[in-house]
Length: 256
Image (cartoon, rainbow, N blue to C red):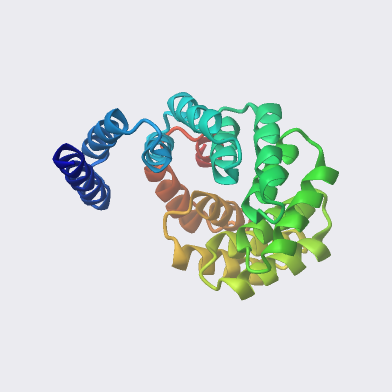
């Protein structure tokens, strides 16, 4: 019918407008169009999912969870929606609920490496290192190029002071992604623990060369140069760190 055809044209125009707004990072305008799409078609899960994603980006996690729950009610078999909900719960420090969401994601997609990685992170927050390690390893089992999971394994072994394993995973992460500044920072920490100051500094500088505003590396460089009694360099790096995050307690204590 003519009315249905006009409705389809209107919906296509709204979708086109939404894509344009998203490409321009005009999220309020994108949301306005998305809500109009939902008014015409309240079963449009793609539009609902995009609303949820925008809410996550805006750090409105409660609103995002509300949207994801609506989607789950309409279709309880979508693993990415459970994973997104779990991410919000992680950010809200609701770790047991996050774990349940990630487990639901995996139940619907057994090889969901991102959900395994997130599940490992949640277990680590609860202090369950055995389950954390198990899930990070599952993440790389299903995705051998998942450098973020290798980073997480590095940090886990570093916290257990297993420097050999930590170094192995850090180097693997760099091998997968040579622009992985977090891995260079981690390797710098490992070498520092091994009293290899020279190579520790080399890796911290590599991290900073990729991301000049990476706060952990700026702090680590300041600590290293402080330990070498090179106070001018230490002061320069800690000043840069304070420009990025003026109220960071760790940074302020180093400055004092």
